[in-house]
Amino acid sequence: MDDTREFATQISSQNEVSAVLRHVCRALRENGYNPLDQIVGYLISGDPTYITNHQNARLMIRQLERDQILDELVHDYLEREGI
Image 1 (cartoon, rainbow, N blue to C red):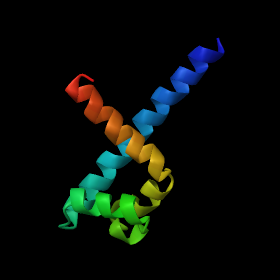
Image 2 (image 1 turned 60 degrees about the horizontal axis):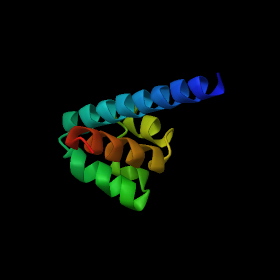
Image 3 (image 1 turned 90 degrees about the vertical axis):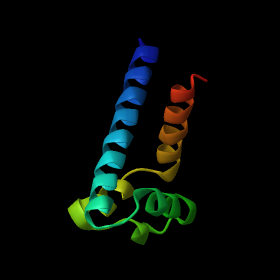
């Protein structure tokens, strides 16, 4: 039973990270920024000013750990590649 709960929490966490990333990308685009450049800058440096305050995007992304975001991005890439 504990394994099932752990898996459900992990899926919820992945969904949360994906939802935040989609929101942040939209907010960055709306402000004329390149989401790829800005998110990579944030992930490498940890500097939250890479993310706009528009639509509370900075607040939302800071509620996640950077390693959570990286995990989701790599997981998604590997899944798409069938690895």
